[in-house]
Length: 484
Image 1: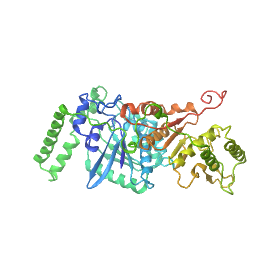
Image 2 (image 1 turned 135 degrees about the vertical axis):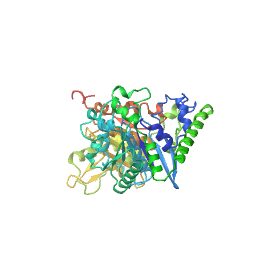
Image 3 (image 1 turned 180 degrees about the vertical axis):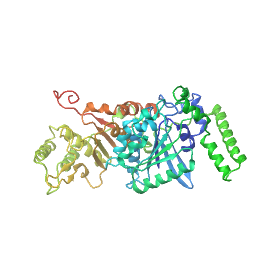
Image 4 (image 1 turned 135 degrees about the horizontal axis):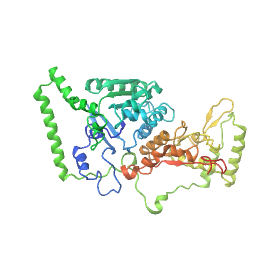
């Protein structure tokens, strides 16, 4: 399985020729026909942002391809893709990261300029976030909208940021298809062998403007005079194959004519085209349905007897485990809460909720800065032996056949980590996925994820997320960013 993330450049090509989306569907969207049927409400999005998925057969090997929907905010989709891949690997028990792989396509200016690129690279080999390496492909057009490379980065290459991982970087001529295929094969073998990120920097150019209405000669007249007289990659490759005797000129022209005729047929078919049923509540979401009325609340209560049993597991540590003296007092206090059924504090109630879920078979994933202990020393999901620093997690020891509980102290990043958890939640609806800010006011470090994905993703792309976000705060009087 391959999960792809990319921006708008070349996306229609990827949608049709890689993902197998019908040309007729793309043409109809250009004529204003919605990409989904009338049975689904939603705002939709431009053609260059829509995702899709398909099963492709390559020489008898069926591979599931998934192109992730994304906003115009360049590179913001990167951690979302990585989170989706992690969830799919968990579902498949793909502990060696051999069955699901991410591919990210970048623009040269965005690769160098957007901080989320560095954040996503930084989490790539951390225990809670690693996916066994990503293949990065930079479409190096040597321009960013109107901005030249000497104004868009300080280093010689847009891929210099990947040196932080000591990742291999292949610089290849985009006008040489066989060289591109060669480095793509090496990159794939490297990723599958060493489970690390790898980068392909494909030197090429943007033949037209930044978009349909753009005039590039306003700002790069000499560059675009050169591009105008430069033969396309297809023309160069055809001439090479003809020169090598692989193809004849008539055969090469026949290929072009047949493909153009195929496109004309697909365009003519838009007159009778009707979009299929919306790709909604499919895959891992197929057993879920939209609830209304009181059913939306669900049934979440547990019995007093269950609470007592869970409380015992949550307040018991292994024999010989050297608990911090302050935590011994906390544990005694928690035991009293479970005995009396009174005076539960937030930390205990929260932990009890998680325990009840994993006992019922629902996994819980908690991620965020310092969330193992909790910013306010209120959680202590991970206990440390004071003499050996061995860890003990009560929530992983509720009962032998419980669901998975995982808690990850994240790096000091909001944007990439929230994006990762959002991506995880897209692919895994049956896990309680939680992102916790260190302090609530720091959440706006990930504002793009809140605005472009979490709050609007379902409306734009018909993609639901059950991600839970926690924004804890301190007492009054701690000053800006630290007080409720």
